[in-house]
Length: 166
Image (spheres, rainbow, N blue to C red):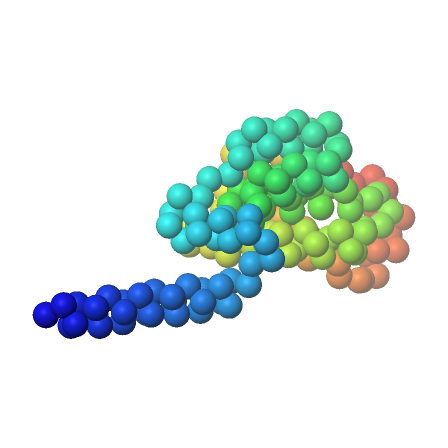
């Protein structure tokens, strides 16, 4: 009986060890901090750092977009919160928006962030109720970012200087 028990424990231990190795290869964490965050996500215990999120929001409202993105990156280290990813994308949009041109590099980074937000949102639909924003859904933000990366004849329109940033 004891020999059978040792064999069962050995098989279970081997299966758990193999699962851990496969999980590590699948998630490809770059640091132990990322391993901890991925473990929390898998266990359903992941939460953002609310203090850093609020600091980022205060910076965003003062038009300090890079600093806000840095705070939000610290608040959502695993990039698993759709709302934080939405705000990061919005910060890329606001910083890259110009009266006469759009910064394509910033808009492309914004598209990546809004894509993460949409993928993380339940049913792929994300709405943020923030009265300070003019775009409240991830879909609206994605359309604005996509239009900013497209090249067209309307880019040469001199009346573009009168448009308003959203």
